[in-house]
Image 1 (spheres, helix red, strand yellow):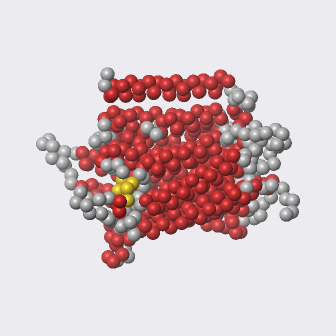
Image 2 (cartoon, chains in turn cyan, purple):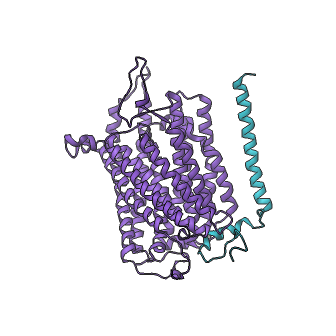
Image 3 (cartoon, one colour):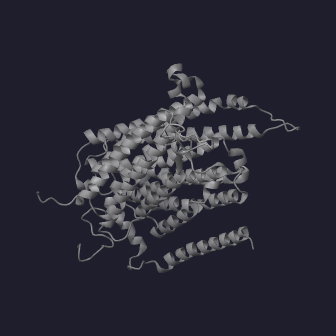
Length: 67
Length: 498
């Protein structure tokens, strides 16, 4: 097998892998609905809607540091 | 020090707002001059033969593209970052003297870079690489500016109160990383003073001259990988960052689907970098690479429309806001133009269509419906939304904003329709031949036919420029004469005077 053939197989395999990864990510988002912190993804829109510096963060970086 | 409640600090955002308006005007003014030079060539020497060197099309053209890309758009990106970044991370620039210093340094060095670019391009000093005309000393300065932007960005992210990064921040990070990679690789160049001929001669050219490290087809490939992704990471990714913040905020509506925004992001990142090959169809680039460029361009419709539809659906049930607010109009039409140009681009990237479209004015039309309709509208909308919040005054005139909207929309429509007709006419005439294979037309035949369309394009551009002057005036009056407003009026819809 020459280098060009190897490249072609490698390219095909990479494309398949990245496609599976992307669809796997979509499946993950829509089946789990929540991230590892237990927040529904849709709650994150509030980061823009409630963005005054005195607003409570959607997911505070440290609960003991801030309110 | 008195004990005041913590507030966001928009000092640096305001500085970049100023350059956005200023460089936007300069870039668009030069664009209009160029458009009329193409329609009426005598304008090339409008200041006399002696100054023709500085007023001709070829000298001004890179000044137009670079002023709009690296002046107007980049300033808009920086201005909105220094505004949006603080707000969605819930941290103020005032909390860090270091970041404030870096932010200001970022602005002033950027300004030095702008002056160097304007002067050198006017003098005709250029590497001749499209959108990468700057010689190596300026490239190094730009890298320093970019690193300062990165320190600002990651510094702010590092001290955030909000653990998760809002989708716009993802897009700003992608802008930073994407441009960094593209700029470095495409601008790899060797100063000519380091070169030596086989005969042992040295010291070629001036100290600032350089040659690309790549040659021939490789140079073309790197150049269009860069060129197309400058569109990706300059005109798309950061503008999507803006609309994901400003449209929900101004309308008070949550993003239609936050999950869709995440997967559109990864889709865009995955696909965009492979599409540059479509600039080199029917060239010496390997055929499989051309095909890949075509295919990835078509696939690119999906993530682009994912974001654009997400934004339009955010307005679901709230369409009365589009009728009521010229600010929302700008963003909704911007999103629509984004859908339009991301459908048009893939169509042009199909090989058989490209056979007609390549090198014609249709391409110019495509770029401009994207940049005038999407990038320009979105950046102006962002500044309109920011102005009442950073100056604590209501927007000076809603009527003026509405007139500006309609005038510029008409300008964009005149621009792209005339370029469609001109481009397809050109493409067909260049290809036409008799039964023996002799070309049916010479170049000057196309020029004669295209003249009316070039004039219409100039008028369209002029309307857009007048609209931009109205925008600049509105922002200036907001800053100086708008009614003072309280924090409570600034929650969602921006306050506007009659």
